[in-house]
Length: 286
Ligand code: PMP
Image 1 (cartoon, rainbow, N blue to C red):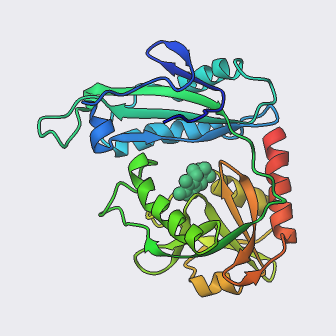
Image 2 (image 1 turned 120 degrees about the vertical axis):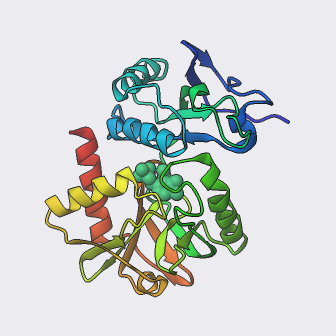
């Protein structure tokens, strides 16, 4: 089996390594029982917006997963600066800090928090172009509550649920899927947060602990409100989205991106989306 990895550099155990450096063994707790957390920030056009918030969130995710975060926000940021020098200045990169448990705890299924390890990977990943709008449908799968999964961490273990939602929606001809929470309110897409616009007002699902209320979501809400756009965080049903004037996503990977089809209805990228994207880029370059 071969896979062509894009240019990749990883800081692990005190040194930088090129390529897909191995980080786990067959007995590593995380490789078997899923005790890993990660975060995803970006470098693009020479900027790294909200890198500090992504570095703070990985440390919160570690605690939620029962791991011991050993790297301060300042250290994560300094290492990122170092890593960036290994790429062209304007490269589009994914910046991924990670923690995981190396050893099992006393009960095997639990992890030994003292054995927490970490790495920081940077790799080339092109920014998706906004000219390519996304199509979405409603997933039959749901977001778990915090009683059912570690939803208060950004953890790899949460993503197989998102992955099956993506596979299922792709089979039906859609790019992405909206997942509801267990009460039937729309929570998020499989890979990003979601906004709708009705009569000039931007609406997005209220953070309720079941989904990742993203850093890009929070940033975009702040920027839109400061620019005079009304933003409402509330409970929204799938029917609300189906009747929206505009739809768009926020997330680290694509930042602010348009949705151009919901079920069988085509949409154009609208003025609120365009303003939100422009505000984000202005902020990123400020
Ligand atoms: N929800 C999911 C499931 C995600 O994977 C992401 C991307 N990290 C987001 C939302 C957006 O979060 P953020 O803006 O913090 O990247």
